[in-house]
Length: 270
Image (cartoon, rainbow, N blue to C red):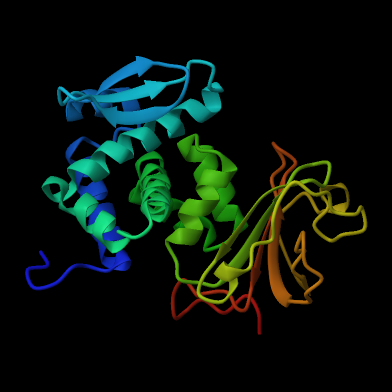
C-alpha cells in the first residue's frame, strides 16, 4: 500500500478502521464478540483480567474477566477482539508500521494501539448504518448519542465517542449524572482536543447542566463557559444539551458552531 515510504499515524488509523469495517461487513455486522472471535479463529477464555494475546504456539486468545458487569462485557470483548484484528491487518504490516513510528517510545506505541482498538470496538458495537440512522433522526448532537446508545446497547460514553469521532468538529462533550456529577467528558478536534474537561466532579445546583433543573424534553441551546475541572480558564461556547428521561442524565456539546446536515437545513445558531 505504501511502497516507497512508511505511513503516518493518520494513514495507519484510516487503513485499520477500513479493515475493521470490511471484516464486519463480511460477517454480517454481528455484534456478538464470541461469534466474531470464533470466525476469526480466536479462542475466548475466562481469566482474572481482560486481555488479548498470542501464545508461543501461535494460538490467538482473548481472556475475559467473568466479574465484568454485563452491560460492559460486550464492548470489552469487542475491544480485545480489535487487538487481534490490528495484529492481523494487512498481514501484520500495520502493527509493524506503528511500532516503527514510535520506535523510541514503546509505551506510546502501546497507548496508540489501545486508542485505535477503543475506536474499532465502537465501530463493531455501533456499525455505520446504526450511526447513520441516529444522525439522520436527530442530527449531530446529544439526542443522536442517546438514540445510538439505546438502539445498539452501548454505553452513553461509547456512543458519544462514536458520534464525535466520526466528525472533525471541535467539541467539548460533558455527560452529567442525575446528582450533578460529571461522569465522563470528551475533548475532540484540533483546538478543543488539547484541553480536557475532566470528570468525577459535581456541578453546583445552579449550573445550567445540572439535571435537577434541566428541561425533560427536547434540546436546549444557550451559551456558557466550559466547566473545566482543573482550570479557571474562561472558554465561552455555544451549548447544545439534552436530558434523557430514562436515565436522568444530561449530555452537552460545547461548540463553536453546529455542522449542518444538509444545505437546506438552517444552522442551529445564527
